[in-house]
Length: 504
Image (tube, rainbow, N blue to C red; front, side, top):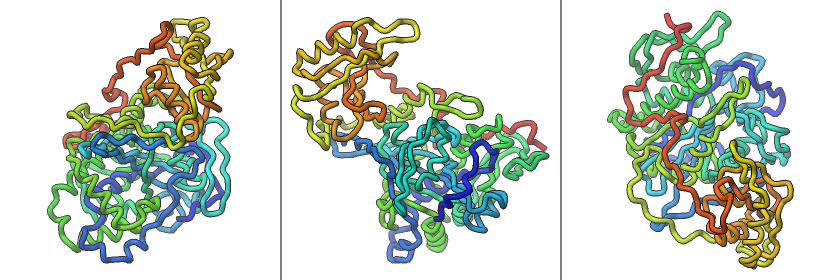
């Protein structure tokens, strides 16, 4: 799809945006096309492709469990591109035609290693993030890292969806295996092919105000099936739901996605070959994916993995956040949510006994001899109530030297405060060294993190290790934060709250 490099719009101009991700996940769970349609080779030609990751830094793949299973992470991206007359009609004003598209919907779908559960994390479009340096694979244009934090939806304009993937990986530390992107027109065509999906409002709603703001959604109180343009209106509605924020819109998307999954699993009419074929045609034509998903067979195989999860084991969440002016930023609870995904912990709290971790995966670049590993030790033992413990970095340097890490030195500048002790490294060629340092001190592998904030292996002694020579990792809280507003996929009684100013 054309990305339109000129005429970039300013963030914050209250704009109606696409909310579509329910379509993509639901189509995947259905199977995109039945095995009988694989011979329709032209379907492969429908699928547009783009590079997976346009950033320089990589995130290590998760370690397989003892059964050899690994989780799958798929980033769903909704583009507000207005690069065709159809998209223009559905999505906005004339002056936005051909403008740089924005990634106005971003949802990470995490399929557990044992395929028993699925977690979905939405990131609000106006989340402030640092967009990393990205290189456009088509023309080689380099987009330098953002100067400070900007809205995450701008990442799509930095070379394509692969920069949105790079931005997510930088923020979350989660390895992303695939992405899928769709635009306005794709939503409507797929919604028409799938048919009605029940949605609920607790009062009559008309999403339109005197200034013309709103999606145009008009429904009576209660539960009603929506499809086509009305489905798009539901997914885009902000004016009329709850406080009118992007957070309320994300909640409506989650309800729609859950409902669609249930419809697709239960509605026998979707086994009709003609309907299934029509859905396959429209789905493949609507999607832009990474090369790993660039064939009908790859999409079908992925769908078979996703459909193993029952709706009751699907959990929808929104990244915990707080307001920064008119924008939002991740909170400490967001990092908790990201960690649960990284460690493949079910967000519904119903993990059974899982296969244990396999032996720790060897780093791509093995560790150097301990005596040759340069380690910078920072004092991050301060907290909200306590000043940093004097001399703590030097104490830990002595520990490391005693264990053979002769190149360990203390950072006189310190690190302020860090709740837990961490080992950071800047690039994959130092991952093995960082793991060796952590292992020597009993620091868990989950506390070894890649970071562009450091130039070499850096040990940050946190507030959880203010004294002593033996590190004791704190017990972790593996519950999903309340602020993530989790919604279970089997909840068929969820209903959107209507803002009284938009009722009739």
